[in-house]
Image 1: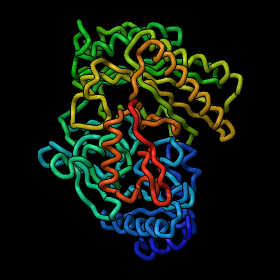
Image 2 (image 1 turned 180 degrees about the vertical axis):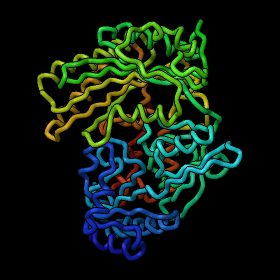
Image 3 (image 1 turned 90 degrees about the horizontal axis):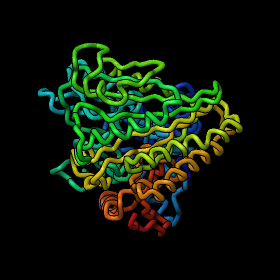
Image 4 (image 1 turned 60 degrees about the horizontal axis):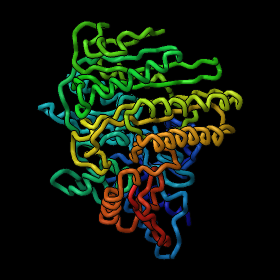
Length: 497
């Protein structure tokens, strides 16, 4: 990055009360150590910018755009590490998703508004709010929104619905909604940080007091039964499957298979939820009581009625911050043989993981339903799922460990496991192209998985609102759309997925 200190000096001059430099050691450390994944904490920026208002953020973006344009005018490429990064909650383990080495880190923590409308139909959420704060405020008012199950995650990375307030590459703030900039509004529902910096979301609310939720903890010896029960319950949740009865209050089961080498243990955990209060504490709703999971023998159960904030906190406690992390994902049809193949991909890696003695390793496979009924609800988006005629399963790995020396080994084993599952799904004819962006590893390409038409749409919207590619080449965090920037005429061409 040419003359980085000139850029920082300009930011300090324009926004002296919002720039944190390494010289202010305690404040700088505090601002750069709130990431969930340890790897992200190790990326040290040249400065941290914490804008206090949309106006300050607009000023910062204009300064960054001027620097970006000056590089282009001199015929220089932007440093591959980028000019700046943007952090909402900082929960992604993808390197550079919300961090940067030597550049400007824009932190949205002061945009932490949670303001329900007077009639309770919507709530305004700042992009720097976290779901624990959101759910606690809404709990008090008997309201809820469709959001994240983990309380530590930032709002900015997990909201698809509603309308947006966004700062564009020009340094101007605008609104994206169904009636104003509708193409940008649609692109933001899955397009990540490729169009600007969202500062506020206005999302629909609905009345909700308590929910019934919790985990079942089971022996690995029940793997076959759990996979069969998962398959049946996912089908029950989808109205496109013949001879099944769905219940709109029942969330799909979440099945996790975990290996912990330190104690030589394999364990299964299954999360169940029912969003209509039944008014009787630990009593199971009939839907889940009469499901296959209702008769399983468990080591321990935590299912009970509780506030959403309590349910979220339970999820958060299972994988605390400060450890090295990697995600990877694929998507399959809800097919018994393919579910067994997914588990085989997880299980087949255990021998080599045990032999490698990865310090502090926790190796987890997660199966999550993606029911076609759910995909068709809500606003138009570019994910490519609206016409899916059958239930899907999002297969993901959540892996954490202690030491940097094991990074490449763990990443390689995770990729091998995913590719083994994908090969089996192709062989069975049960693969699906969709890749959920927030679970993707750095080597995966979520936008290609949306399909050629949707990818081209996202590229066109990026060109319209960011014609010089500031958020493609200047902000390199997260997944990009394959468009060229200054001094770089190469681009990735969409193809049919």
